[in-house]
Image 1 (spheres, rainbow, N blue to C red):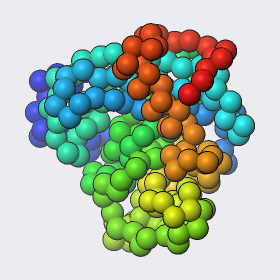
Image 2: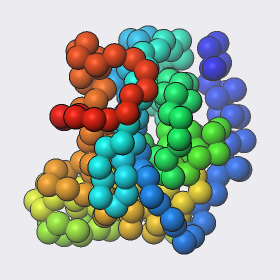
Image 3: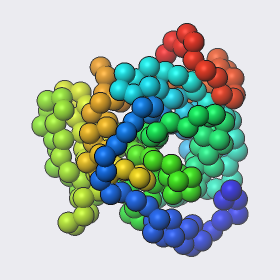
Image 4: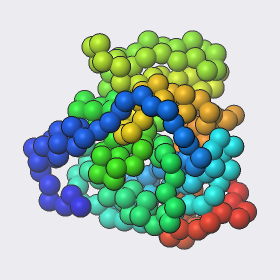
Length: 231
């Protein structure tokens, strides 16, 4: 999808996609939610991508999709979506019934050009999406209180980009921001309902486990409905 693309051209694409992104708050109707994760070595061309679909709000796995793909786009901070989104789109296309919302292990609009992987994916597919990342990429925030459920705003100047959310007491927060067709506060409210006993919310945690099993050769490529999935 992005083979041979130069950085100035990538910036142009980001700016064009940014103009299409919708992060207005809205009344949400979520019956199914999915988590997405990507696994690759920093400078490798091989990408392992996975999406797990779950019922919502009970977070029961329904099915999963896995793809092994290749990328030729170089590793450049701020442009990782150009390496990862094409594989994510391949995984998405194999899911027969699309979930109402996709949570990506990465950022939405909390990005210098407001186009992290979740926003980039949402912009090119038109699907509601949001990011939940393990580290801050862009914006400033104050550390939330140490108790579970605490949160603080991520700002760029006066612009609210997302939230640092303490999903588990006394551990580092996760960083939540909308991608497309979901608001900033919508994103936080949704991720609160996805938090289990781990720091990483269930959709992206289970997607990460799936991709690691796929990478180890324990699971095969393609879409499968879930019967007895143990993660």
